[in-house]
Structures are given as structure tokens and as C-alpha cells.
Length: 73
Image (tube, rainbow, N blue to C red; front, side):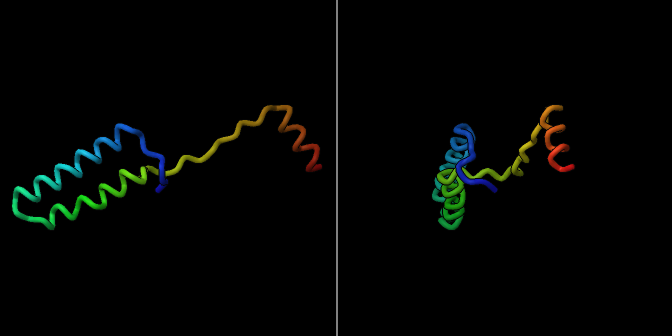
């Protein structure tokens, strides 16, 4: 879970889902359903991304690899 790693389109989707929960809950007469919009609001504002974090990959050139091997020897 990473903060502030959400794209703008996903923030908009979460906003519209939040509004749908609030409006639907109020029209249905169930305000507790509208309370479920709070986690959506917080995740949109904080930009929480639930995708796994990507590991950085490093590519060593042959010259760097030989230099590391020489230092180790």
C-alpha cells in the first residue's frame, strides 16, 4: 500500500463511487450506507494505491560488473 501514488482518473472514479454511496444511502433512508463513503473519501484524498510495490531493477554493464568483481577479489 503506497500513499500519493494514485492516478487522477482513479481518484475521479473513487469520488464518483463515494457520491453514489452517499446519494444512494440517503435516498434509500439508510444513512449507515452513506458512512461507508468515508473510507472511499480518505483513500481518494490520500491517493492510496493498493497495487504491490514494484522492485527496482538494476542493469549492470559488463564494465561495472568487472569492476565489482575486481574489488571483491
